[in-house]
Length: 254
Length: 369
Ligand SMILES: Nc1ncnc2c1ncn2[C@@H]1O[C@H](COP(=O)(O)OP(=O)(O)OP(=O)(O)O)[C@@H](O)[C@H]1O
Ligand SMILES: [Mg+2]
Image (tube, rainbow over all chains, first blue to last red; front, side, top):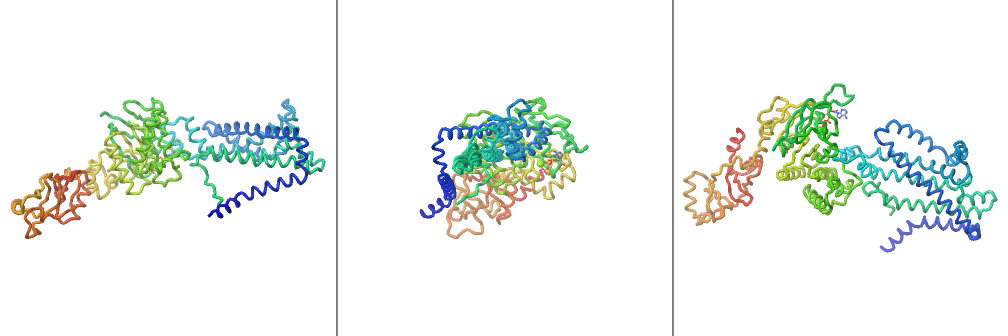
C-alpha cells in the first residue's frame, strides 16, 4: 500500500524533477551560475523588467480582453462583434516577432518612440489580448439559452445575469484564453529586448551574439523557470475562480 | 377570492412567421388559488401562452391582467420576481450548487440567511431529495429527473403568489411523478397559489387542474373544469383528446368518501355470536364488519364460516384488507372492490375508524351525477 502510494508519487513528480534537474545541470555546466553571481544586481534588474513586461501586459490584456469580449456578447453589439472578431482572428495569426516589429515601425506614426519599455508593453499587450477577447466571447456565447431564459424568467436583471450566471459559466473558457495568452507572452517577452524593452532577453541575445553559452543560459534558464511559475500560479488561480460545477473533468493522473 | 390572472384576447404572431398565430385570441380567467392546466398537442402554443404571462415573449395584441393590473404597465423585473417560473428544459445554473440554485430568488429578494437555509432544506425534502446528500452537489452531478425536481423547487422558493410551470414533471419516472404530483397538490391545499401548469399529458392535466385549458393550433378549444370537460366535451377533438376511457378517467376526480354509503353492517367484536346471527338474518347479508369499542376496523365475519365453538364475534373475525381511506380516489376504490370477493369495500378514516362502505352501484351512481 505505502509502496504503491510512493510509486504513484514518484511517477507523478519524476518528470517535473527530471526537467528541473536537467535545467540546473545545464545552468551550472555552462557556468551561468558564476556569471549570475558576478552580475547579481543586473540579474535582479533584468528579472524585475521581465516581470513588469509580463505582468503589466497581461494585466491590461485581461482587463481589456474580458471587457471587450463581454461587450461583444451584448445584443446591441451583434453587428460590431462580427467585425471585431474578424480583426481579432487576423491579429492572432501575426507571429510574436512580427508584433514587436510592427510596434517598432508603427508607433512613431502616432508620435511615440518605437524603442523602449513602453512600445514593448504595447506590443505584448496587443499580442495577449486576442485570445482573451476570443475566448471570453465564445465562453459567454456558449452558456446555454435555457439557463439564461430561466434566469431572465425568474426576474434577474441583465447585470445579475452577467455576473452571477454568464461570466461564472464562461469562466473555464475565459481562463483557458488567459492561459494561452500567458504562455504566448512569457515566450515573447525575451524578444522585447530587440526593441529595447529590457528583460532577460538581454542576456540571451548577448550570449548568442558572443557565442557564450554561459551568458545565454543565465538568461534562458530563469525565463524557463518563470514560464513554469506563471503556469503553476494560473493553475491555482483557475481552481479558485472556476466553480466545480463547470470545471471540465480533469483526467485523473493516477 | 377574486380573479387573479386574466388573459384577454391574447394573440402572438412571431416575427417572420407570416400570419400564423402561435396563440390566437386566447381568453380565460383564473381565480386566486386555482391551478389551470394548459394542455394540447405539441406546437399548439402552450409555452408561448405561458411565456407571455411573465413577458419573456411580447404580446402581439390583447391584454394580460394580474391582480387587477395590466402587466404591460408593471416593472418587468418585479413582475417576474412575483411569478415562480419552471421552464420546460430545466435550466439549472451549472456554476451553482443545488442549494444555491434554489436560494437564488430568496437571495434576490434579500431574505435573511437562516430563512433561506430553512427554505432550501424544506423544498429539498418536498421534492424527495435528501438535503444533506444533494444540497452541495452541482447540477451535472444529478440525473435528468433529479434536476427537474430541483427546477420545481427553485421555482417555488420565493413563495410567489403565481407560478408558471412548463411540463415540470416531464422527465420524472412515474413513481416519483406521482409522489411529486400528490405532494404538490398537498402543498397547494395550504398555500393556494395561482398556477398555470403546462402539460401534454391529459391524465396529468385532469389530476392537477382545477381548470383545464385545451388548446389547438393556438386557439382555445375548451376551458372547463376536468369534470365538465370529461362529461361534456365540447366537440370531437376534445372527446378524442380526453380519450375513449374518459368516463373511467372521471373516477380519478372523486374520492371514495363522496360515493360511499354510510350505513355499513357493523358489529362490535365484543358482542355474542347470537347477536351476530340475528343481525345476519335481519339485514340479509353474508358479511358483517367487525369493529372494536372505539369503532376501529378489526376484520370481517362471514356467515358461512363461523367456527362451531365461537362464543363471541371476536372468535369468528377474520382479518381483511378490503378497505381504503376515505380520501382515496374512486379509481383505487373500484380496483379494490374487484380484487376481493366481498362485492364491496370498507371505507375508513386515517385512524381506521369505519365510515362507510362502497359498492360498484354507488360508483355508477356518482358518475351519473
Ligand atoms: N421563437 C419562435 N419563432 C417562431 N415561431 C415560434 C417560436 N417559438 C415557437 N414558435 C412556433 O409557435 C408555435 C407554438 O409553439 P410553442 O412552443 O408555444 O408550442 P408548445 O405547445 O409549447 O409545444 P410543446 O408541447 O412541443 O412544447 C409552434 O408552431 C412553434 O413552431
Ligand atoms: Mg412547450
